[in-house]
Length: 114
Image 1: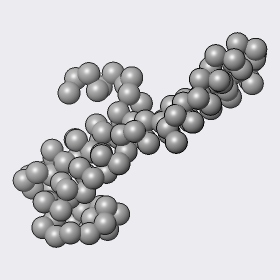
Image 2 (image 1 turned 180 degrees about the vertical axis):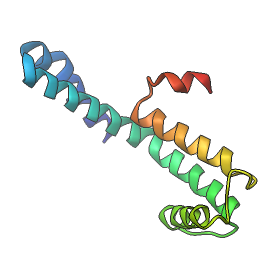
Image 3 (image 1 turned 180 degrees about the horizontal axis):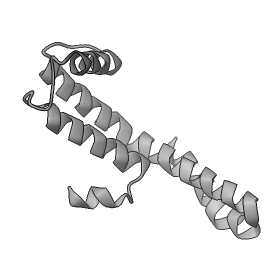
Image 4 (image 1 turned 90 degrees about the vertical axis):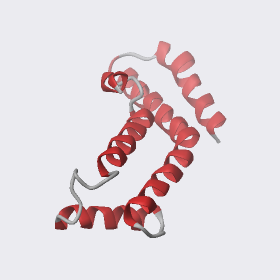
């Protein structure tokens, strides 16, 4: 699947975009960028999600789906049961954010600081 997404992105970038101008060229660039995000999600997303789930299980002390665990984490943060002093929480939040940015915007300058 990733190869297909990358092939379409390459076609847009190498063949279509040089022929386009103005607003249409802008939309082609947006489409190519979106396909790059999809390709990175396909490549990095499953491992990132599995690692996030593992961290959440350790933080919360029980198993569940990634969605269930994230909902519970949010609930605990909202209620004040968890805060940045909770062991492992700050590291989990920083790691999860970094991994999501690596997929969505890998050129983001803030990634170079970590």
